[in-house]
Image (cartoon, rainbow, N blue to C red; front, side):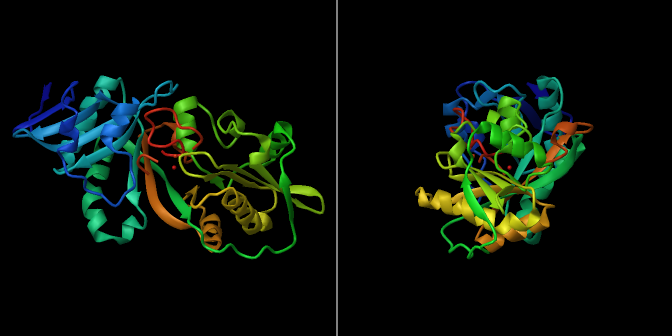
Length: 329
């Protein structure tokens, strides 16, 4: 147990048997679709010793839960961080936990869509985000999760044809030509759980058959690649990469159509917030923003600076206890 100079404040990890203490603090953002703490405990991703609370007079005024899926190769990351006190309290909580962990860890701050435009959301999230900065974490980017839920798809231009990938060699050859994929859903989880960079080695994480991948062709030549996962926590567009920018809209619509034909009623896709053209094309295809995830990382940590690693969220057969494999997008 760690007592701090701040009046009446106690900061400590949970111990087995008092897990309900975490949920004694009301959820400040109930509109976010997140896996519950009890569910995460049952799956093994959350653990009492990785969960810290700040208490005043026995009441939880700050809580932080780091998650690490069973079998994951990486370090835990901060998945839930709520604060009903001044930022200094949250910073003290994070510093105490970081000391116990042996150093600062990545924080994925899950936020409702369009959070910057919503004063009621800003009032909730400004304190924990300020606390993260006070504790030495640096904002490294923002990822948006988008969802298609049955909107009619745009009519294809007719300039392209599509077919399933022939084999893994064809997929890998195209991946090697695509420097910056448009969509990488589950990038954070792949890195944290398996040490896989989804942008350069997607087949190390997306282990379905090659015909889960669609290749766009113009005049018989491959110009785009889309990887889908229909059996994930949510059906998702896991990878979208282009050799030729003009194919973006047609390939997006084709990938969603394939998932919908397979029975998907919802398709999720994650995109870096700065990819304005990609986001516009997703929205033209019928996707709508579900949430944002702002990435805070230890200063000098390059592993997350490109958007690698909004909230417990999903990809193929998530390891037990993971909010969702594409999470942490």
